[in-house]
Image (cartoon, rainbow, N blue to C red):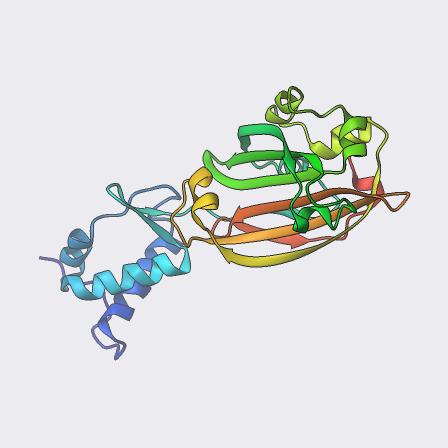
Length: 257
């Protein structure tokens, strides 16, 4: 039987030796993103150690995001995080295209809702005013990853021709909301927002197929036109384990035409 590849002279705890060895195997490309790793028992047998340090090492790698455990399927090497420029005055779908990231719109709908106070106040409306809400679920690299919600001021929705009955199809095809607004002559010139780390509740976890409490990045933004009118209140929510953002300051000329 071949000797264990672990360093017998190291004074590190055994689980840390196992973690370092597994990490080195991943760094060396022994397993590609998406590959399933051997079982804990198989790794323990290869390293000639008990199951306990292997389990501790795997848990550490899962916590760091290098591997992921899928119930009933096994343990897999994670893909590199999706990275693209994040600008408040830019469309998510256009940003994904610019970064050459594969995505698809899984669900796109427009409905009319009574604006609750947190939505009505930023848009300068009375609570209860009926306004259109746009909701899209995006899959990135084949897996649900982003939930986009937008509440539009009535004048903006009317100008863009967005209604409950139609135009969800254009958004479902991946066309950007900002592109539709620009075609209607509405140019967004200023936006302010906030980035928060949150945990997915049931309403957020369900459409993205995530577990309750999964870490998420939430970006809330309020955009204005050149006349200073609030046009859109947006909430974008991302699977935090799959994205890295490069922050850039948006400019009017960056917006789609």
